[in-house]
Image 1 (cartoon, one colour):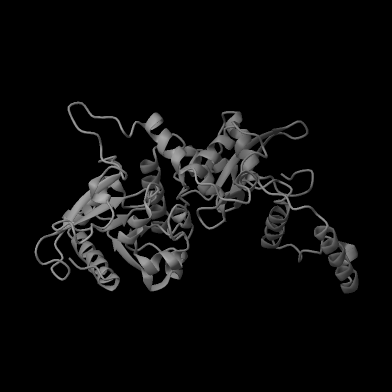
Image 2 (tube, helix red, strand yellow):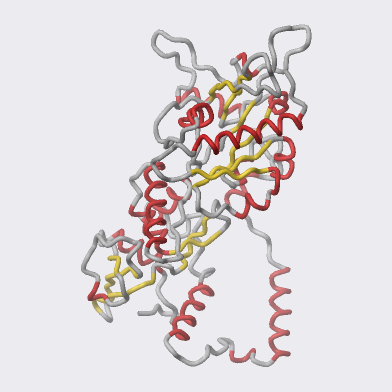
Length: 426
């Protein structure tokens, strides 16, 4: 089946139509529609999605599209990479799942793919991209309203390449040049020069994000602070208790104490990543760093500030040092950044947009970067590119957590080393 332009059908458009018709495609272990009888087949075992289509000319048709086929959805968080059909369909299957459940399901599917000898992996979308994709597939936004989905016109080249690859794989002749009148080298150069002149005369257009930002970056931290209380109730007083500490009223986050105030010393700060894909977040970071045991972050405290103590004899022989753990630095005063000693990161640079140092090279020259991932999984290229300023720690996926303490001790040794370099002394 092909479209009017002779190219293969667009898988995203097909899937959106199936969702609207309440008739999802069926995973199949081959491109033969007659084998697609098991609607519960795992995506790790399937190789194609079988779409049931209707047209006036041809009536009912069955169309098989390979699951590894690239779609028009481009994930910014994954390094501007276009998603494959398996990742898109899996995201729709988990549209109603929480972030933690979706991440766990993605990891389980990738494990199953590896166990079946497949090199493909399913991409775990961040919350904003997952929401955008599912709303588009459900028809809640227009065809051209998604900021992550390229238009069909912009995707014609990719679809044409898919058609050529399929023809070559089927044993056909070499693909001919589509512009027959440009086979002559001189004519091709003239056409390229003409296109350059046309593009040079075009007016540059920005997307909605650029248009809203303007030429000057605005600071909306005061608006966020005001409405976080209104909508999320972060300043509500629990029954019979005291108000929850915040970054502005917590005495632990005062500026470094002068010598005239004996007995009080500044407390170092550790920043966490707010990403839903991070293995260590506020609910489980304290048990990991204090007890040396990793637990899933789906349950636990929802506080935006935590404290833990750690004995570091080489820095403070008299008593343990109290550290402050925060995942949102939007209310930091300038002097707080001088107490930053470590930053947990997933390799996503959007994490640093509210930081004093937004470039990784600057940030990790002032504080230790820490990337924690699963043992055996590939470390992101972004983390590797940040160099020695970022340490890589990997934890086991198994149920036996006795190896976690070794990882935690290595993390603390690196934090201690960086604090010595920064001149911390108590």
